View 1 (cartoon, rainbow, N blue to C red):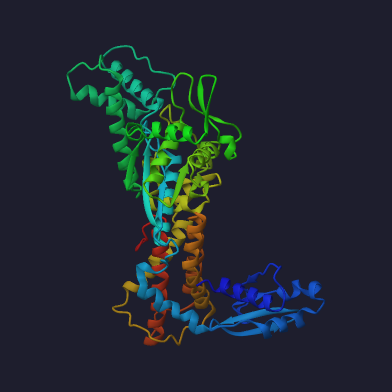
View 2: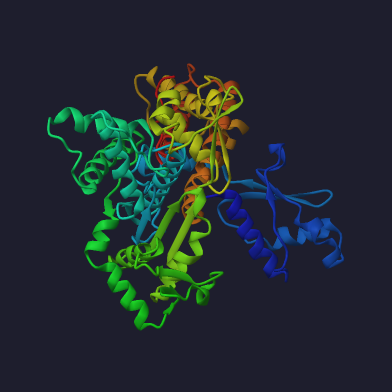
Length: 538
């Protein structure tokens, strides 16, 4: 329960009782806790509207307030503040609730077991996964973890783009590198792939067989390249703690005849027309800026056509909702894809598309440039080697994916409080160290010695966790989790500095040990939602 939100809700209900329902209600946390756990200046906001002094309005609100067992008392102080004091027993009860639920604390059932498909990463299997893929993979995996935690039936899906021109270029690139190893002149295409992994595949073909493969057709090189690079992608993602339930190939969608089925359906629904020898989709009927080509005048499909068929295939699998996580260069693609889904008769609201913005990698305050085609790429493995999986996952989770991100390598590796990951991790490790130092923590039925503002600040924050997770799920914002964890860690560090946890008083010691154990559980559960392992030692 988010106590602040609960008071806001009760305050709004009270205002309706006195005839006020069109005003923004704001509840704050006073710096001086002697003035209450929460406070509002709503009475001063209503002075002009009600033509009364704020003190009179505040008294009216207090007298009409719809209370419950959460609030212990309400004070009105000049010039018209309303201060709320929380029932301490309500605050303290969260400790045993957390410790009893343990790994399940924060879970909810708002997802109602609805089937949701999240397709993310889906990098073309033409090279190694780079920094942009790392951000999208981290985000997609975090979203899956969070939605699963609040009760959705989540399927993680990777769409393998193995049916387009890029795979032809991959085959040509490998074949030309192989020709070079055989002593022939390489004729690398301008739009080919120049990364070291392409040379490695060619060398492997050359070393593993004495047979001359120069005359083999392109499909031979495409198949070997696709298999090799896809296996490497799977290994790298697993290393980054990202796994998938389903790997769907574009080629399999084509082979099942889903494209022809999709085109026939769109034609029957009157959503296509022929112009200049091409087949067009009436995407403008669904808000797109112009109609889009499905089949070019040379008979080739555009990128959009198999993608619409792929989404038809996903809907046919019975999902209630689809989420796609796309890269930064896909903004313009979203309206036409949604238009395609609507043209097939599906509700566009059942498809959400999240766009991950660009990442700049900084070292010594300078940007590290990268280019996929030339092979000058910062890969997921490079990043892990530099900062570790946990720091990388934490730093990606800190930022809203809708904003561009500067990933500071120097900051991510700093062992100081400047590093947000270190700051949160150190709070967890410090608690682990304290708990290891005692033989046994006794259960506490009633907490009677916890009475400091530092403890109550932590307790209020612990009450917020479940709602933070739910908001993160509803809004697709894993960064809400990291913001919360940082705040909780900060409150713990303040508590640790100002309170003695271990003492000769057994009851006092046990109560504080139970409190910090609850903080430890919440930090661990929160970190798990963003794919970070909580460090027991630092």
